[in-house]
Image (cartoon, rainbow, N blue to C red; front, top):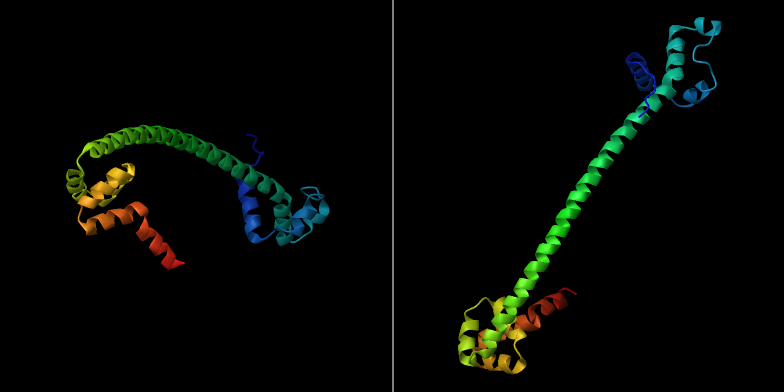
Length: 180
């Protein structure tokens, strides 16, 4: 990166000028002036000389500040790009893991459903009645309708009604209808 040839004292003076308020239209006027005017500048009071000095280095100070900000932004941009690459790699890794997990669960679910499909309805009803309601409802939903109805017929009516509500998603639909 190119840096303007500013000494620390010039940069400090420019900062001081900016803090004192030597900016605005006066800065625009100094672009056409020479940095140090001849005898007219020597006859001015000290406040005018300092003001003139501040005006003459204001552009250089602004350029230096701009370059520092540009370097800082470039550094931050590189850091963000690095973080994005890491996050993208993690996302791809997670998607692969999730696909393997879903394949495993799908195979396990098929095996469990086939086991319950081959059971007698009264034995399946006892087992499903003692399971978590969502798992039992998922198994019943994957069974063919004839086997599901036979299993629900063997259950207690209250538990069969709960499982049917979960399968049909009735509580969710009732809550959403009440809210609207």
